[in-house]
Image 1 (cartoon, helix red, strand yellow):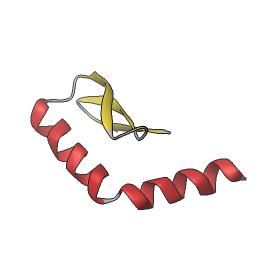
Image 2 (cartoon, helix red, strand yellow; image 1 turned 45 degrees about the vertical axis):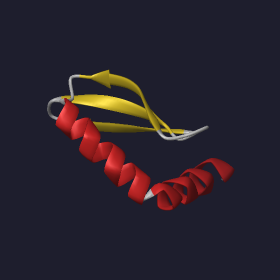
Image 3 (spheres, helix red, strand yellow; image 1 turned 135 degrees about the vertical axis):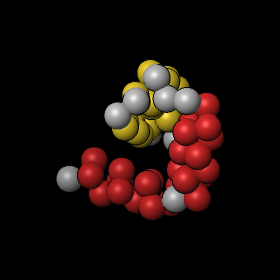
Image 4 (cartoon, helix red, strand yellow; image 1 turned 180 degrees about the horizontal axis):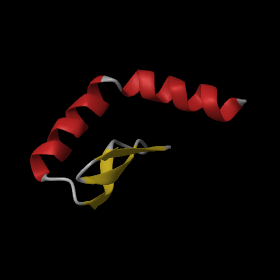
Length: 57
C-alpha cells in the first residue's frame, strides 16, 4: 500500500506498509516532506479505508 503526492515543485511516494515512510522524492523540499508525513500519519486510517474501497472494487 502506498500513496503519491504531487505539487508544482515535485512529487513523492510514501509507503504505508509495513510502516509509513518516504519511498521516493522528486523535487519536494524537506519541510514539505515533513509536513506531508505528519498529515499522512494523522489521516492514516482514512487513507487506508480509501485504498481498500478503491482496490476492492
